[in-house]
Image (cartoon, rainbow, N blue to C red; front, side):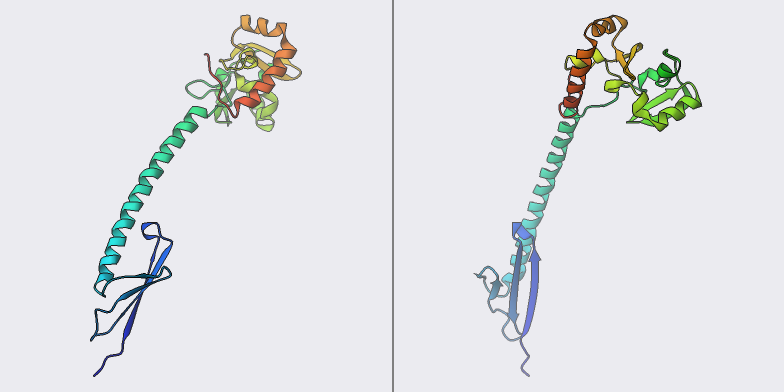
Length: 220
């Protein structure tokens, strides 16, 4: 009894960089070695037995391409991480253990007009740094309006920022100007900064904006 022809349809996607290859294998029990027709590209293949061979070859090519893409992706991610590491700028000057203002109370400069050390009992995390306070009252004030009490330029030396680089700010070399807290590297540097205070604040603000897109040098 004659057997009706059967048709095998397969779709191979993204093999060897091709968007899609759809091919049709026409065969019957009596005639199993008929040609394969690869549609959508007008490509003719060999006899029917070549179907599995072509499929295997495409799988191998796809595997090699996939491995190549993975290697390139890993290399790209690694390079990207290096770029981020090289250009990332920490907006807050902090100690190795993550303390802003070296653990001093930012609110105390305004509340009692002097530098006061904070306590781990009153800690608040803001902009990736740990801020300590001397009382729960000061802690709550800072939480309500951190930008009001946090030092300008992230607590970096204002004199350094005005010169286009960063340096650590000393919590004891401080000054509040127009309601904003400024730190300098040392009392001596603060004196130098005060001689051209208005101009240096203006220049520092301009440089600070640029620091966010171009990491400045840090000179200690």
